[in-house]
Image (cartoon, rainbow, N blue to C red; front, top):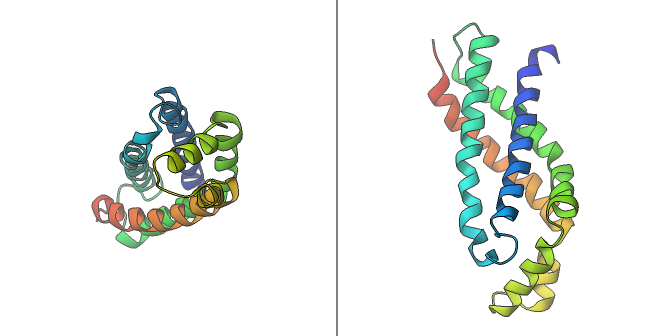
Length: 158
């Protein structure tokens, strides 16, 4: 575990950044009056997510590997971060859905139904904590693996 303290630190930074992002989204109205723009603007978090992985792998390269790091070492470090973020995802989603923005699901359901994007029943089944928890875990794993694979290319150093 001592060898993975950097990954734990950066996974917690990632989770913190995602919670702050949700606070920001709520503050600018993307979970309420501007919910119609939520699907577009929430994707901007990808910039933050990629930056966190870059800084994490640079930190790992500098402070664990002494300034050199192979692609595989970087990729594995990214995977460790990904697994931790995915494991914490249900808790993160609980905090978002119950503390930061409990009105999101009702607002999203109303928006989807009012704009003929979904039926009432489909929207009520889709916008649930259990569904978002599952999406969060799967999304964290898939996007984390891809991000780790790409970022490791750029931070490797012989």
